[in-house]
Amino acid sequence: ILLFVLFRLAGGGNISNDLVEVPNVAGLTRQGAEARLITAGFTVKFTAEASQDVEVDLVIRTNPAGGTEAEPDSEVEVFYSTGAEEFEVPPLIGQTQEAAERIIEQNGFVLGEVVEEPSAEFAEGTVIRQDPNSGVLAGRGAAISITVSTGAETHILPVLEGETERDAVTALQRLGLLSTVNDEFSNTVDEGLVIRTEPEAGAEVRSGDTILLVVSQGPRPVEVPNLLGSTQGQAEGILADLGLEMNVSASTQPVVDASQDGRVVAQFPDDGVEVFPGDVVTVTLGKFTPPPTTTTTTATPPST
Image 1 (cartoon, helix red, strand yellow):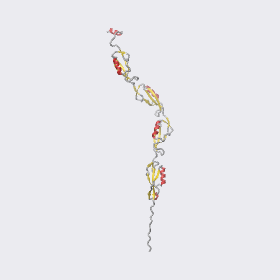
Image 2 (cartoon, rainbow, N blue to C red; image 1 turned 30 degrees about the vertical axis):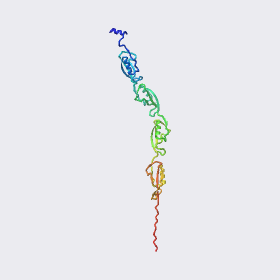
Image 3 (cartoon, rainbow, N blue to C red; image 1 turned 120 degrees about the vertical axis):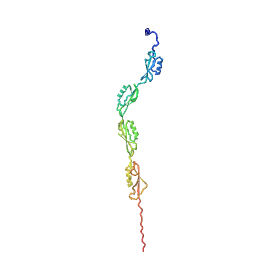
Image 4 (cartoon, rainbow, N blue to C red; image 1 turned 45 degrees about the vertical axis):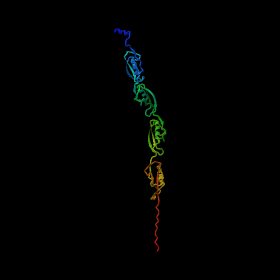
């Protein structure tokens, strides 16, 4: 036996367990790698490993490495890719751009696109959006883009008088402005249209500012006054002061009191009813007709 061993060490003769070259299976699927290694006379052990460069389920490398020699029936460990190792994207919103870039690098990611955008909510130089969002899983080396605030943007407040409330609010939103609405009666501006703004049109404002829109409710309603007993002229003057018009009924109403002749004895609508400026109140005037005069005849006694 000793002589046989010395003979083998000296390189003489062949034995049945000569070393076999390990096939290079990098880049193959697990199934393909296993088939080739078994055909070459090896047993196979699979080990999963994350990889940024090798697609999922493809072989990254083997141990022993492909091209080296190993004993027949020995085990070859095959490392296959599970894809890039993923980590949670850190939260960056509210951080300064400098701090965000540092956090991105510390977490194994790279800075992607940097976009600037006005913002009333965030101070200049502060991150207002990020892509991907925080908490999303991404592989090492993935790019994270950020949007950085340039601060509030200055605008000249446009003329909104006469616009509908909806159109005015939309115009303000386009400028990054907020709005609040107060209703007010108006005899000159139609209901639903803007009467004025506070501040006024032409004022310098910054995105995020709140603009007051004063919107018309239309004319303020008025109560019909009591016109009974008024002359036609008096009634017309009272109604005119309230912005109301008067219509005199073509028919009159008989009265038994001479003092009611030519005065209002009926009206429509009744007093206390709410109407709007420009509405018409119809009045009926009284007409006194004196009772007919009766003549008494005295009988003359016969002469004697």
